Image (tube, rainbow, N blue to C red):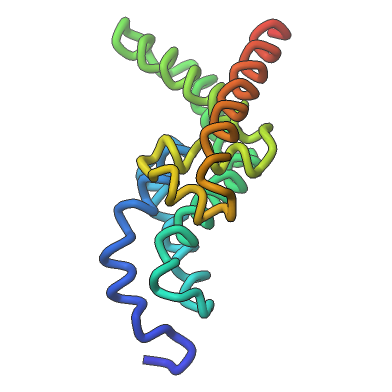
Length: 168
């Protein structure tokens, strides 16, 4: 093992991987892409000196940031829109429902990507199952302010969704 790789990486990876993938999947809506984000996140983590006790918080925040960066890049949206325009694809009622659901998820993810970074990350972490204390530690907030931050993020998300729904 190269000297630059953390000696505790395998243990932390085994303990945190499902949660890191879960955070990224909440943002991206794709397990495959979430696993790619998790790999990027663990690669970055391997080069840090973050104490093992703070690893899960660091990894979850990094996964949320990396996933949001992927959303903002627009690459995923462009390929999905291109696939949706393919006239050779037959639409059945079940497929139509799936397309509508996917469109809703895309709208939510796009709105999430327009929120202030700290709000978006707090919202993703909290809805990924992290406790208020874990979100507070990961984002360097007081535990009492996590609820307020998450509520403001939810409100801002609703406003973003409403604003873009009315401009359609």
